[in-house]
Each structure stands twice: as structure tokens, then as C-alpha cells.
Amino acid sequence: MPTKIEKDAITGQNTTGHEWDGLKELNTPLPKWWLYTFYATIVFGVGYTVLYPAWPSLSGHTEGTLGWTRRGEVSAALAEQKAKIAPMMEKIKAAEVADIRKDPEMMAFVTAAGRTAFAENCAGCHGAGGAGAKGFPTLADDDWLWGGAPDQILQTVTYGIRNANADSRVSDMPRFGADQMLDKAQINDVSEYVLSLSGTATDKAAAEKGAQVYADNCAACHGEKGEGIQDVGAPRLNDGIWLYGGDKAAVVETVTNARRGSMPAWGERLDPATVKVLSAYVHALGGGK
Ligand code: HEC
Ligand code: HEC
Image (cartoon, rainbow, N blue to C red; front, top):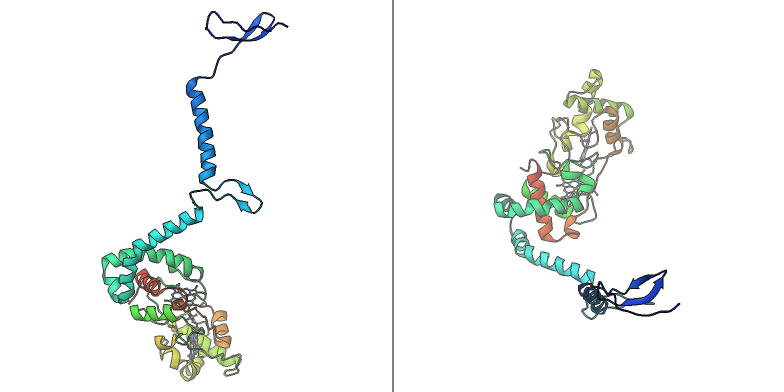
């Protein structure tokens, strides 16, 4: 087949010389703008792999001449964020929790930072927004085991409850059943009496007998009328709010084996400013005193 490059009369372009049954192939060059864009992408692509981490190797990858890493970018952003909040954290660290509560600017910060820190550290036990769960007290109400004043909350959060910290809050309800301090009948009676304090007893005669058992064994911690004593973290028993459940079986179980819930000392795990942020946050959640 003869191949002959000739000029096409209509377009003024050359043909390729290929011809099929009289049809000749036109050799139209790529548009200039397309071609230069194409070259530019090649230059960009090669340049990119030189400047940034790109090519895999047996032991990792090329680092790129700019020294950029995603980790570096994240730490730079974190450092910047930290620097931005540093003055506020310093101010909070130096302030009393009660004063933080009174200062709108600090509280605006506490509301935002506290929500995040609470979700990260506390919500696992105390529930989202401090709603509480069985064994984990609600923090969004004004019923306090250890006290709802700003400094009481700060102390609870800093040193925790029934843990190894020397300043931890401690007080252990005796295991009246397990340690045979009371017999089954006495436990039944005193449990009915406890229920009667919030009007839910079903056995009046037992509740009456239980009153004496209560006065002898329980009033020292829970108060004469079941009003609770915060110095020993003994919950109020006459308000219908229960940490471990208010049905008869739950009360009998508490009296028999006690519960002894514990909380870590957050002062050992978080910096002092964050502990204050959280204390002010918790104080504001519900009915801080
Ligand atoms: C591992 C579970 C756990 C985590 C996590 C936890 N707590 Fe607690 N917290 C408890 C328990 C259990 C109690 C009640 C103990 C008791 O006195 O019987 C408690 C009690 C409290 C109290 C006392 C409530 C009162 O009525 O006096 C405060 C305040 C508190 N927690 C705040 C926090 C804050 C703030 C965080 C996050 C930094 C947090 N807790 C994280 C388990 C936890
Ligand atoms: C040494 C102090 C102390 C004495 C004495 C004591 N308690 Fe308690 N009680 C506590 C503490 C502290 C708690 C909090 C839960 C825990 O740590 O076990 C508690 C919790 C309870 C609860 C659970 C309340 C809830 O909200 O779920 C009941 C019910 C209860 N006590 C009843 C009694 C009865 C009845 C007696 C007497 C037979 C008694 N307690 C004696 C300290 C005491």
C-alpha cells in the first residue's frame, strides 16, 4: 500500500499517509492549550513527588524535600489551639471555682471546654450530660452524695472516691448481711423501714420493727430521718432518688453486701486547670449549691 503524506485542501493539515479505500487519515495536531496543560501536569506531578513524601521504598517512602508530614501538620494545629486557650486556662487555674461560676467570660469557656472534657472523661460512667446510671450518680440534679458546693465538687473530682489516693473520699457502708451484723429478718425489716421513708413500703409491721434497727445501725451515717450525711457520702434515703435502685430487692442487696462505688482521682490524670473546668462545668450542670 503506498503511503504518501499530502496536504489536505480543506483544513490545510497534512494527512498521515494512511489510506483505506480512498479514505485518507488527517493528522490533526492536539490543540496547543491542551498540550501545554498536559506538560504542566507532568511538571507538577514530578515536582510534587520531589517536594512531598511520595515514592514507596522497601523501608518506607521518600520524605520529600519540604519535610512536610501529616502528623507535623496536626501537631502544629494542636499547638496553635493550645496557645490560643493558654491564657484562659491560666486564669481558670488561678481562680476559685465559685469565682469562675460568677464570671461570664470564664463560664462561656467552661461551657464549651467542659462539654468536651466531660464527654471524654466522665460520660462513660455518668452518662451524656451527667444524666447518671445505676451506681453512677446523676450530676445534673441537686441531689449530692458528697456535697454540691463548688469546693466540695472540686475536692471530689480532684481526689476521687474510694480509690488509692491518700486524699480520696472514703466511707464504707458495712456489709450488714455478708458480715453477719444483722440477720435476714432484721435486714428485711430495716429495708421496709427505708422504703417507708419515701412512702413505698409494702409491709407496715416490718417497717415499724425496722425503725429500731435503723436507729441503731444506720442513722449515724444516713441521718435520723434518712436525710443523708454528705461528710460520709451517705445518700439521702427519704427522697425517692436511688443510686442503686429503690425496689425492695435492690435495698436488701445494698444492706446485705454494701456497694462501695469508686471513682478515680482526676487530679492524678488531668491538669489542674482541666479539673477546675470540669468542676465548674459539673456545678453548672444542675443544681450546684
Ligand atoms: C469509672 C467511673 C467514673 C468515671 C469515669 C467518673 N466518675 Fe464520677 N463518680 C463515679 C462513682 C461510682 C461515683 C459515686 C461514688 C459513691 O460515692 O458512691 C461518682 C461520683 C462523682 C461525684 C460526686 C457526686 C455527688 O453526688 O456528690 C462527682 C462530682 C463526680 N463523680 C464527677 C465526675 C467527673 C467530673 C468525672 C470526669 C472527670 C467523673 N466523675 C468520672 C464514677 C465515675
Ligand atoms: C458507715 C456509714 C454507713 C452506715 C452505717 C450505713 N450506710 Fe448505707 N450507705 C452508706 C454509703 C457511703 C452509701 C453509698 C453507697 C456505697 O458506697 O455503698 C450507702 C448507701 C445505702 C443505700 C443505697 C441508696 C441508694 O440511693 O441506692 C441504702 C438503701 C442504704 N445505704 C441503707 C442503709 C441501711 C439500711 C443501713 C443500716 C442497716 C445503712 N445504710 C448503714 C453509708 C452507710
